[in-house]
Amino acid sequence: MTKNLSILGSTGSIGTQAIDVVRMRGMAITALCANKNTALLEQQAREFKPALVAVFDKDKYSELKLRLADTDIQIEAGFDGLCACAVEKNCDTVLTSVVGMIGLVPTLKAIEAGKNIALANKETLVAGGELVMRAAKENGIHIYPVDSEHSAIFQCLQSSPRKQALKRIILTASGGPFFGKSEEELKTVTKAQALNHPNWSMGQKVTIDSATMMNKGLEFIEAKWLFDLNPSQIDIVVHRESIVHSMIEFNDNSIIAQLGVPDMRIPIQYALTYPERYASPVAQLSFKDYSTLTFFEPDYNTFKCIDICRDAIKKGGVYPAAANGANEAAVKLFLEDKIDFYDIAFVVREAMQKAQAKRNITIDDIFDADKCARECVLNSIK
Image 1 (cartoon, rainbow, N blue to C red):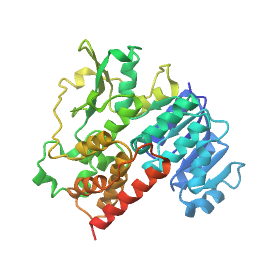
Image 2 (cartoon, helix red, strand yellow; image 1 turned 120 degrees about the vertical axis):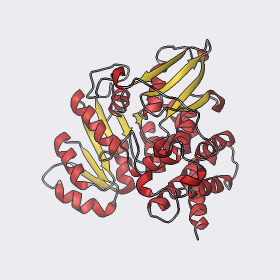
Image 3 (tube, helix red, strand yellow; image 1 turned 180 degrees about the vertical axis):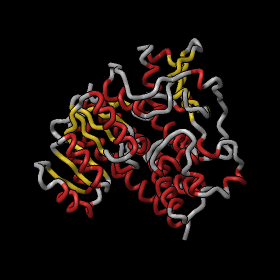
Image 4 (cartoon, rainbow, N blue to C red; image 1 turned 90 degrees about the horizontal axis):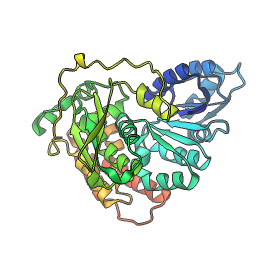
């Protein structure tokens, strides 16, 4: 069980829910890092009194320094501040809940510093899964998944210690706000519609990824690394109710599923308290409220991002990093009203396909592929 926690992304959706869990479990927080919400970051710092607090936006450094001037908390800023929180000397677990590939380097630094990882930043494994999992093995570090789907797989796997008995895993997808829509209908959807997720409350980038179903493609890649699987062992099914969070199938064709109401505090708490289970602030699941649970095959022709990610992980190397970087750039352009929703998949595929095949990739290769993919997306709108 985590005793001393560092939270990267403490004011975001995952970070604030993690703090709910921390309060209930009486854990200590030794470091906090936020993007730019200094008001909430100050509240968190005053409540938990960490040794270190950082704000990623350097323009907010002076403001945060002033807000906490009467404390003895160390204040840092920028990327260096983010990394400092990842390696804070007294923490034993780092919750990485920042959004985007920005989480890769601090995660690697935390692993090298001997910190266990509660991973809510899927892009870290998408872009650098080979490097991250190798570093974790070499340093004897545990990576506990926080995404509801991967946590569900992790929980189901506790029922059998014999990996060779595992036949496949089945990731569930909500289908997002546009389930059942045609390609033609996707050409006219608005930003407000794309940000209106039916089941989950998430940040803007993750919500758009859910609408394009890119999030499921990214989770497909993440699952390959987390559970050391072949892509052929990973399936996806659309489950609109978001009650079955994912499933595993054994070689005797029996299936085990993890169920619960759609509340991220269950997977967050399990990642922080594994292998123990404790009472949680989450509502109890009542099957009387869910008399019907539905399952559908994803519409791969309409929601093309899943197959983009499948292609990327089959190619390996830097292709997943390119797909991820292109998607981050495309989603940003969509949120800025510079491209249409329907364009996201096309610019991502084009950028991913332009990546160069490489073996024995390095961190520099990953960042080069990310940069080139983002530039490709920007050039596509000029």
